[in-house]
Length: 162
Image 1 (cartoon, rainbow, N blue to C red):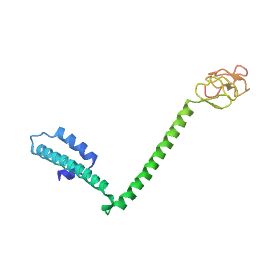
Image 2 (image 1 turned 180 degrees about the vertical axis):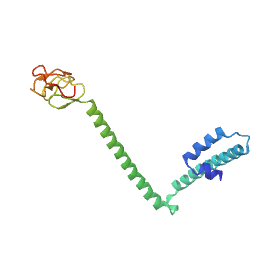
Image 3 (image 1 turned 135 degrees about the horizontal axis):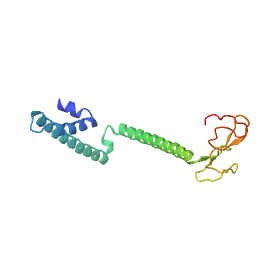
Image 4 (image 1 turned 135 degrees about the vertical axis):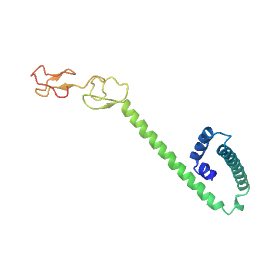
């Protein structure tokens, strides 16, 4: 039952088992049970790893002796296909992230909207100075206004959003 509780949860079982060892006193019946179960699980894991290694070596020495050879070859082809799909997805994700980074590093011209590479001081499309605040114009008369202007100096109109 302890194996079901601690070993049947995969990685969570190992995490829980490690946590339980630090919480449950070793000299109690539960602590002794947990320690014995943990030792047994560790030994079984070591045994499985050795048997797996033996099986791999036996197969590698003479693959045609094993009836599972065809199935294993098919699985390995599927693994290669899945790995290629994973690599392609990773590459696509990296490209999208690089493109997003390039766009955030790029400087958009406040006058014409052209996207210029990072570090550009003047727009490559219209020649406007980059990094300056976007030009604002009076909502009443159209006069160009300094950034942060609340009332137009030409017509006295109150400006929106300021």
